[in-house]
Length: 289
Figure (cartoon, rainbow, N blue to C red):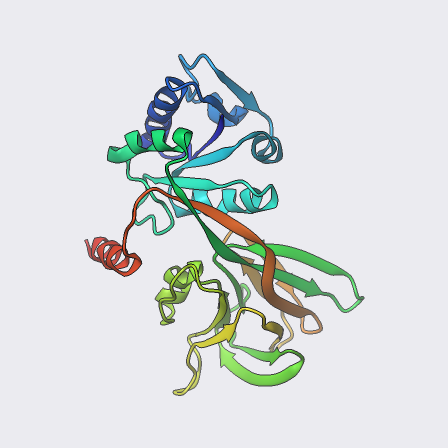
């Protein structure tokens, strides 16, 4: 079995943890593959059955299972490739919260269960985000957690119009609006006052960001919904669309942003039978410390 190891090399603890994981799994006859940049940090030192590749595309095309070592950001970045190549993934948390991570560093021995098939795979819904420009050209993105439409570099309130299945439903005067997956409901949307949604549900969460209204609330749409959004800033300066906090795309007043459920899914490996809401409470208590 080929195990892809994706490591956040900005965290020294992640590098040492990844090396221990590589030793553990290779001792059980797994082949460890990783990116060349990760290998340069010594992740594959003393690992006999291993290889380094040059791109995420090669890595996820070759592997059977992917293991990320870092925080939720490492999982989110890798998830786009895992969903594209339909590969299951599991996260080891060396960050602060790790909502999406399954394993803590003290429990990496449990990863040996990957080789015997002693695990479950849960599917997580993703969002397809399409920008249709005024000239008819289209740009497509995949969101794991959320897509945010917000003001740009200037401190201006924006006017956002939202339609459902081509019927206008709402207008917001706010700093922005946030479209989230159930997985993303515990990320930016939670900080913006949105509800917690069970991660395996299929729905789209809309949450206004600092709305200038006393009655603006989050709205949950059915997973089959197609939402269209246009945005204007009063001095016609561009707004920004952010995908999972990783990519920022300039949005002009004549552009239309379409949000819908993706046909692709993220497959997350589960080793433990844990109650999601109990785990959430534990993580939120950690956030207070």
